[in-house]
Image 1 (cartoon, helix red, strand yellow):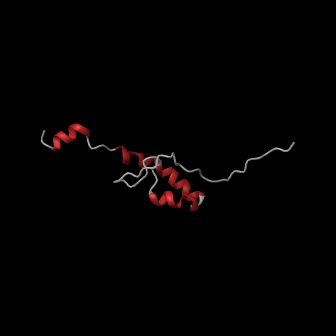
Image 2: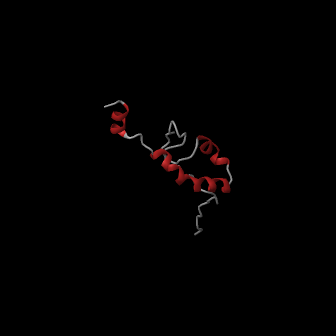
Amino acid sequence: MTENKVWTRDEVESPCVRICVVHPEARICTGCYRTIDEIARWSKMDADERQEIMAALPDRAPLLAKRRGGRAARLKRNGG
C-alpha cells in the first residue's frame, strides 16, 4: 500500500479569519487587521513580505479598539 502524502507549500499562512469588514476610518480589515492593498496583494507577496505584515498585525488591533466614549461622551458633547 502506498502512502498518500498531502502536498503543502512552504509559505506564510493568511491571517484571514473570514470576518471581512473594512473599518471606515482606519481602513483596515476588522478581522485580520490587513489593509485593502495587503489583502489584494497577499497571494503575490513573497514569504518575507508576508512575515513582516504578520509581525505588524498585533500592533494594529488597538487602532480599532478606540471608542468615542459611548453614551457618556455623547451626552457631554451635546451638553446633556
